[in-house]
Amino acid sequence: MRGRIIQASRTIFTLKDEAGREFGCRIKGKVLKGVEGFYNPLAPGDWVEFENDPVHEGSALITVLETRRSAFTRLNQKGLGVHRSRATQLLAANVDLVVCVTAPASPPFRPRFIDRLLVQGEAAGIPLIIVCNKTDLSEDPDVEERLEDFSRIGYEVLRVSAKTGEGMDGFIAALSGKLSVLAGQSGVGKSSLLNALLPFPVRRVGDVNAKYDRGNHITSSAVLVEFSVPGGKGAVVDTPGVRRLVPGGVAPDQLIQYMREFAPLEGKCSFGLSCSHTKEPGCKIMEAVAAGVIHEDRYESFLRIREELSALPFGKRS
Ligand SMILES: Nc1nc2c(ncn2[C@@H]2O[C@H](COP(=O)(O)OP(=O)(O)OP(=O)(O)O)[C@@H](O)[C@H]2O)c(=O)[nH]1
Ligand SMILES: [Mg+2]
Ligand SMILES: [Zn+2]
Image 1 (cartoon, rainbow, N blue to C red):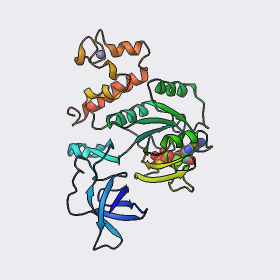
Image 2: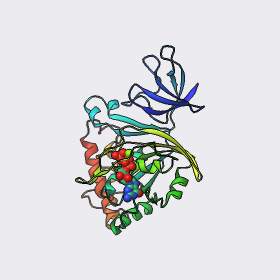
Image 3: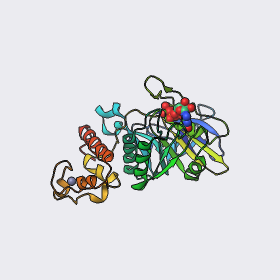
Image 4: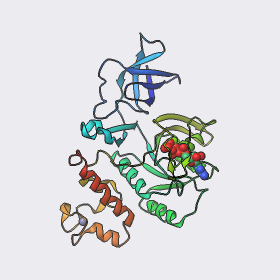
């Protein structure tokens, strides 16, 4: 029998079979082929074959993992001291679209967080869009300027409000027919956006902490939810928000390939691939920043992410 994982811890999983029934399940035996390289063996979106558990009625044993089309991961800081594979957490599998959710206010707009998510998605080879939620709260020209720059470098940017319903048609159209992952800072409204696609809310949403003006980490584990509305149907993985994000699985010297407007300039500096893009004459990256082809904020992100990647114990190798 075949089913899709909809929720996962490291040892216990929930899967949904092709008739729509949900089971608790475990992996049969000690090893499952194809799960190597990650902190957790399976994630929402994984397709598996399973059999009934002869011991525990109503639960299932996973026998085969189907080859993944894509893997959306994040760096698990706790695993860093142990082993490279422990440091990569699989958030969702077979992902067609990463939706980088942000908000103009409450929590404060953080374009550099979007840059990090974009790098993570680009490194996984998964298409990305940016969704700015909570448009009912603010019309900040600085936010608009950054969103327009993301459009300029080639990302689709949607402006929506889960609260008022503004822009939701476009949101539904973008997610239709796909398995999408909602990612972003805590409190930007990922669970609220998912709830807006459902006939009744299934995901708990939280308040933005008044004192710190940031989310309170309401969602604690990734869950796959299917939706079907007049504008389309698809599946969405809602993920827990994070405060800090270091793109995992990226070597410092590969970073340039995962920042769209930087990538075509790789190797073009006077010092070629050895250019650090910080002080060298004839640096095409710095020239692009001066010419406005690369936004200063993105250049700042590039330098900071690269520095963090270089400081990781596994960062030097790819
Ligand atoms: N004004 C306004 N508030 C919103 C909107 N969308 C969500 N909120 C509120 O923002 C707060 C956080 O929403 P959540 O959906 O829990 O945010 P989240 O991104 O899932 O947060 P985590 O699960 O912690 O990562 C809640 O109080 C929501 O009611 C919106 O479009 N406009
Ligand atoms: Mg949430
Ligand atoms: Zn350079």
